[in-house]
Length: 258
Image (cartoon, rainbow, N blue to C red; front, top):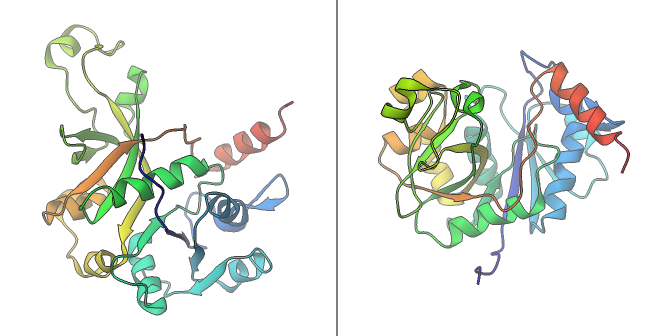
């Protein structure tokens, strides 16, 4: 029987600037700004508090009347986690408070998945938790835009990479179009839960070589020796919105016949 869902805060980093999709948080999906849709998913998940951490007044204005708190943060943060560390310090969240980092480009994140990452952290003494989902398609495994996760037998993350992991040496020597059935290939889902006290530690950690090489901020945590709990998501996470094509796909998905 699954453990009870703990109390948790959802914090949504929403930076206005984006090279691939300018003004991304305010881009409308079926007439609703993306950041508003993300905030609605967080409220639906049952968070005790939903905070949007942003650097732009236009995002503040778009969230007026949505029942969420907006925290104005500096514009020079290197990552969403760094932005949330400023937020945690601003509100003085207790060190043991569970903070879920829901990306501002995940307008269709399932409520069950948001709750599950909070539960994963509550059930583990790791300072950070995340989610994954099985990969069944070889093209997805070899796609560098898909982040792969390898877990230990205790459910903690061993490594994250854009490279195809684990590498099935014998199987891939003859055929890379089909995945062997005896290996757990996992796609990382970019949702995180942290204890608020660790957010402050994270912000003080020096960026690491693997983090910079792979452009994956979670590797900073592993390289500094901290564990990350990793669970399978109970429901699929639709792809996030990074490009104009993604936005068009989301519009088509919402307008499909029910």
